[in-house]
Length: 120
Image 1: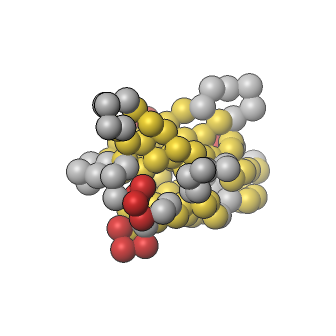
Image 2: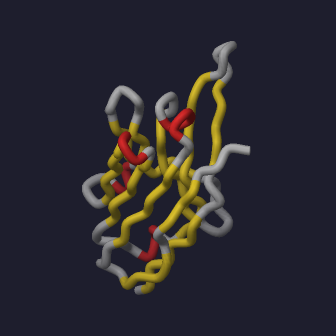
């Protein structure tokens, strides 16, 4: 079973900042687009940010200008730097590794999730 190891998360006041980290096995990291998703209670899981192998980034509109995703290949780690946090950012955040299999099928691997709670 693929292991994506997440760290960070916790409780922060509105306006504060937080950093999430996710480390993957090197063999997976080098072939995957790495990203962060989140899921709030009663809502669907949504993409927050993604850093592709081609070094392009994608962000949800709701986090643009506040969140930055970085990828450190030497450490097989992807980071999500979050500033100006809002109560609406409260969710479980999941690390994601997205890749294509030998027959072109899309394959996703997930971390265990880390809770981010922003108090007002």
